[in-house]
Length: 250
Image (tube, rainbow, N blue to C red; front, top):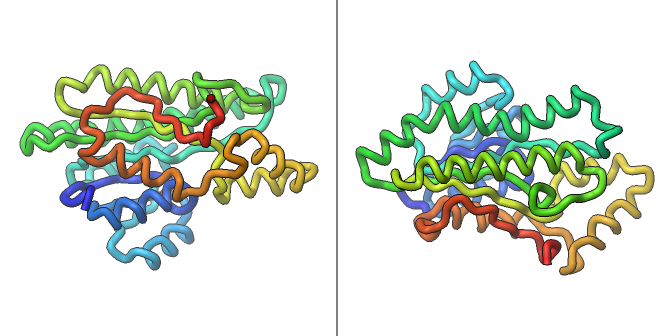
């Protein structure tokens, strides 16, 4: 098993990529601690895989994150998956939209990493076992601009910058930090955005049309990349924006 002996924390694990990643990591032997803000989705995750430990956590609450981190065993893996996709350009982005997007998409990662990193580093020093952080970014970031993704793209570009900085700071200690940059993934979040469009049928066609492979990604296209980046198979990979986009950027 590729993650045997590893302890992995995953945020926003109740649905979508976070859920698929939690299940994939558990199948590969990791001790998985899955968090989400939604108790219903966490309950169904636990029903699907009883070995996964679950906990309610609002990653926008600094004190809650600190309290939760104090209860954790030393981690060897962290997947920051929580995020939000705002629709619109700069004129549709109010300051509240900007603040919410950066708080959830970027600052939540800062909170979780800062709260868990000291114990992670101590674990590495004591055991000699490397550790890995994976941050959810996007192809809509510093890699490429997309229409109506103004603050989303800005926040995901910040995630890539933060990831590279952490990788540079801790590479000599054996801590890896990478950003995952998916293309358009068929998740409950995407389905909600499609349903909210003026013409949902056309909206889905438009999302598919920008994928050269002619289809949306599934969560099972993305989760194996999370497993890889958390596993020792990626022990020489750090500071990278790992693109899984079905060919959009080519």
